[in-house]
Length: 505
Image: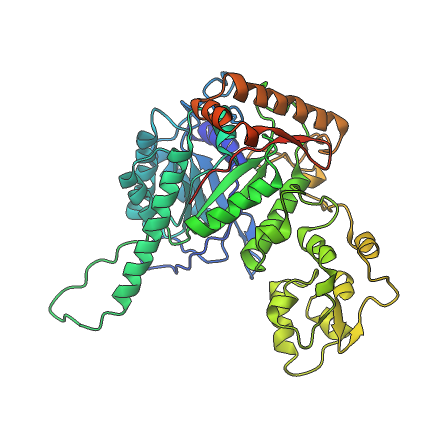
């Protein structure tokens, strides 16, 4: 099998890993070396001068000894063609693509070939060739494999700009049932080690900058590469198991708080392999994924906490309005807000005003009084914001009843999938590989009765498996916490299993 045939297989297998994240690294070019990195650089993004910044997304190998039910590379999937790069092949391929201006960085993941340590050693060998032999200074995002020793994690972090460990599923019970070879400890241990290593590296570099003594006779030591300077992220699958949005967002908030993650990615479940424990439907819960990303943005940038966005009595995000608008509709006593005097924190709570817009308002109102024309020039989504603001005492929503029902009718709208991408059914679900076209059959609507029935059948099978032949952790949890594992009715008629969240404390 030649390199192009391997690339066709391993690039296609890597498309289910989400990598659309900013690099967070600013590294200029250097004489005698190759490449550079910018903070705005990310997968499928654009720089201010119009260049498309892309990453080569590829697996080291899709050979895997694990048998995760949801993964196309699972060990029991005999139909999947298998391939593996040598470290030299992967490094040469990356540099060849970079020199042709096809890519500006590398996203590297892998199946588990033999054991986590052996697979990580192969990935490190490829990155060493890139960094040391070719002098590559571009952006590299690497997926660390659960169960890898801390010594290899340290080495991998020095060669990568960003590290990530996939959390996979939102609860310990679901993880034990659908990914029996993985455990909570094997996933969280490297995440904690990466978090501690990043903190230690930042602290030591900060202290080094404060040194005032100069040793003229001593040659400066070679500067060590920073440990994962762009931080770490993770990814979890949504829709393969019955966990609610309330559980998922609480877990995300805990990861941000305790492990200092830069980003939590949500990936709508894709039916790539058949399994009785998984929903046998082509429907992909893209709208739910979209709402979770919106809620995640509120946690990270807008000063919200989970209890403000969602609660246990209503454990799923509203499908017809975005989470920020839903909060505003439930707290009309907070509005309207006067844009010419309200603090930044209050402006951030207004639907239609983003972080950039709120800062621009605070800056512009120092020179003049703001009205509708000025807000529109600042890029505010005035059509949405006008119901929740006053401009020098004048309410923007005149003629509309200031009630939850009236405003809900104005703000509710289906999610616009646009003219391209997954929700427009013009591209395959997940990110495209290098060899796919934009033509793909439409997926079943996620709200159709057939899709809901398929999910219910799979979730019922998961519950029976947990109650009878589940993992040791699952059996113990059910035996000792039967009350917390009972089924509860939820608003849309579905049922969910109140599984304990992965503890990150």
